[in-house]
Image 1: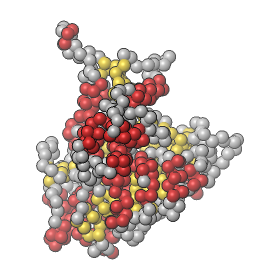
Image 2: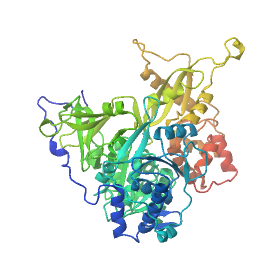
Image 3: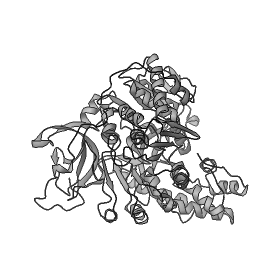
Length: 627
């Protein structure tokens, strides 16, 4: 494989010392052992702030023991997989701790996912029960967890019978987008979390970090603002999502003593663009999920030289994070981009061409090894064997198991790992790993959709912002009644997909074509479609009636500032123009600045055009805080 850096003949191979030597855990080998270590030392310290409620370590531990006893009575034990359908809350954290105490693994599901998708995942999990926050009918027994009285649970002292749990036991299942159309279930182990949080430099043990918990539990990075804090003696502040964190960052620092945050890359970029001084007062900032923009990184480092900015990298198959790097000004000027850094403890990173290590500066596939490796894919031993392989990269050529990430990268002469792109059709969007084949496979199940292709839409910084679906329609209806034959319109196709796909997989744009462009070998010309998608996006922005004078003209200017458009029609949806939920949050901030009125994100979704939102503003209605 060739790379962006010229390699001279005889260039050195990577130094084995770039991978840290493995060592045993210090405080325990399971997640709940690390948590209980903190409970013994800081029993009265605040573990969770959830709205007006403050839950101490002793109270959260007691609730997790009580919930574990409930799980035991309901038949949950070692090796079980327990789906959890609950919003962010202190109760959610107690339930997850209870599940791992029982030697089981949790599978966090999102209440916003289509019910059909959740039902399919429940079938794959073969769960003995499902923990939920609201009553509903599901094909498995349901355990409804209401709002807990943590003080009463602490006084009750109920406990489950002890079970043996080891570091190699599964602790969680995370479902990712899959090329087969079926989400891949990645089984992660206790040891993956312990290797990071036993001695975590980002939020030091005993450092009493105060950190917002805003990441979805369905994403393995959830561990960065939940377990990273609770396994080290800090305080978790429960929020509704990362958009709320971005909007309230100044307030949280000033009023809640927040000193540590992790923001997905796209959210970090947004805050840097809209309120660079909002970070003032923080002790440390972390980011990851997508490629970090050198322009944004430079602006942060120049404005906040005393706040370390950690750029983190790692697929779910290596549990949360594999490498990290504190960004410097020199990194922001590196033509290779901001580095991914060096491996964390008990983790090893290799750049391979096949099974052979690449020379310094040579691009190859990033492969990961160590205690963070997942146990494999749920119910798919063939894929597990394909992605988790043994290669001769150990001492003296010994075979080691590595995970082939599909990411391309290279090592610089100083040992820093750099990201060079993807080897397949997988993209990172809003922190999620998305297989474009997964979206296409679902689209082909829509009646009347024939050939189709999904292409990513990129923003000015090169990050994937959204997806565009092109399809060729086939007639549906009764063959002997030509008048009844119909072809699905793009709006209908997108509406059907909205019922079947989670929001991060739903294409923002859907276009019908007479035929997909193809290359000489009859393969779909993805490059041509990508160019077409960009042209159509520009045309949509330029088409339509111009905004009227007054509120519409001022609001159109705000739309244009957020979306990077010179012209914004009055009747075209913000989201069809390229907006997404992150941009919607930025739009709310700028509207507040321009009009001195607080609008909620829900109002943007309900009135997404310039004309419709201008009517809301002219009516003087305020949506209040957006949670």
